Length: 322
Length: 267
Image (cartoon, rainbow over all chains, first blue to last red; front, side, top):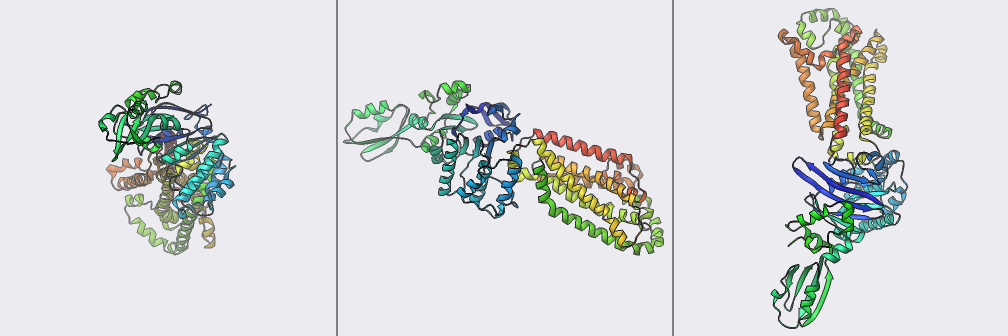
């Protein structure tokens, strides 16, 4: 069942196209990572989903309801954590929790979250550290045991131990069937938690793929150590980049099909060979080189149903050119 | 909706209490001073008669200003200090209620809850209105027990007229501020524009009283319709005051709501 359906979403601020015709679907129980640098359109998309801002065009359905028209009803089922969570300085954590309890009438997980995050709710917000404010923001978002969680940079400002605690909580919620939409800059976090990612650049969706597919289909890193001298030019062909020249070999970044490289290597005398998937970080950075992504977008802007049937990355022609 | 309402009252109770204490203390001071002025009312009347009529109009002086408690209070307390306090209290609140929340980013907490934007708008408006009623009631009706302490005669009914006029005047000021708060996302702009509008209309009222050729300008002044001397000393409120203040309050409330429901809220 689709929990979030975004269809041809556009949001323009006068001439600035903050979000430009993006579409994606997120299913129940999925953890979806929304990646992109500052200003790419992540927060604008989230704000449209939360009806803080009105889309210029397109449609957002959440839990089969219109995110704009049925916003009030939907928000009782959504837990939301804004980026750089802003709280009332003169209230304590407990004041915030009680306030939302009265509005939402749901606080099933408060005590559990307070204990897990080791949070003291009796301190005024103005005296809390950034990390503790973030903890409170997370408690407020999660406490109602929502069907859908929309988290904008959930672990920003938290130390690694707490980050790990958050990951465990989110994984636990996912097991219970909660759908999670999270934007993040933290690629290792996305790699660990998310089933799929959407990568947004300049308001356009540059990729929409499962983490596994994205990593495995997109890039390999091949390190070869040769027995004798080898002409580097032999490895210069489409989809292959010589990342580093070693004293007895090469490190290659290979995009897409690695068969042609493997065949080439098979004809040579080698001492050692390793082939590994590129990290998500390497894949992510690949998208943000100054190259055209129009080709990818054309395909990604197809109707959602069509996207689900045909991966944007099945066709290597869609890979952004270096 | 009422959770938001009561939370605001809780947050604002200290500042409201301070305003109420200050206004009561000022009132107490004026009432305590009144017997001394009353004893010299004959000479004060002579003095007032020497003032130009336009000056009397501009600053709400009345022939009863020093002979009756109602006249004295309407001139000393309710013509200048009291409106100033209302402006500070209500424009301060109005600016913080919407624009301040957006500026600080805390509105995202509210917007992410299952409360419609209109209920959010209304609950915060009603909270301000509640504070307004408390302040007006305390600042007007506390004169009655204080006057009794000093054994001064007064007409209790006249205080009802003043309370009603004061409430309408304050409501109009508050609604202007609240509408501006719905339009802008910056408290500074709300304070600047509200203050600008009020100062401009105050000056307009004074200027229109000082020169006959400019007298028609008074109809554009907010303060022309706010005549505490007439309400307290003569127990009268002009029909135009009802129309202007309530009409303006209603217009600002509706226009502000339309803007707030439609606007993109980015923090």
